[in-house]
Length: 89
Image 1 (cartoon, helix red, strand yellow):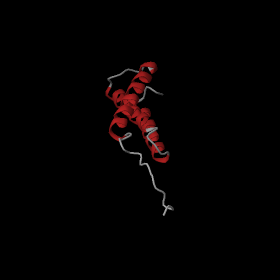
Image 2 (cartoon, one colour):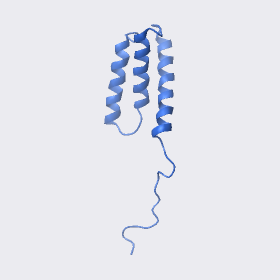
Image 3 (cartoon, one colour):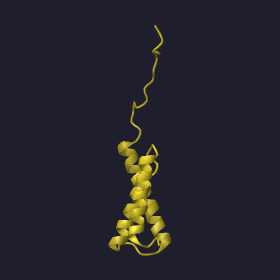
Image 4 (cartoon, rainbow, N blue to C red):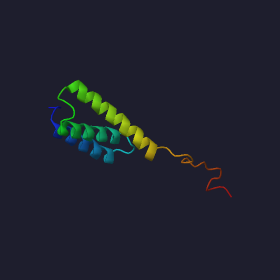
């Protein structure tokens, strides 16, 4: 089942929908990795060996997570420190 390209793509889109429902960039890297693995399987660049597919999925997911973290992750000065309360006079 995991050697069929569209299974990977559907799983990636499912993880993308789950990312919309759950806040934070938790599932987006996995979604990009699954869609990327599906594209590679569909193009015939990687074979039907499940351990190899799992390794490709893991590498693509980590790469996507690092790229997303670099472009949309924590920014400097993102946390605002309040030194005065609204109720202070």
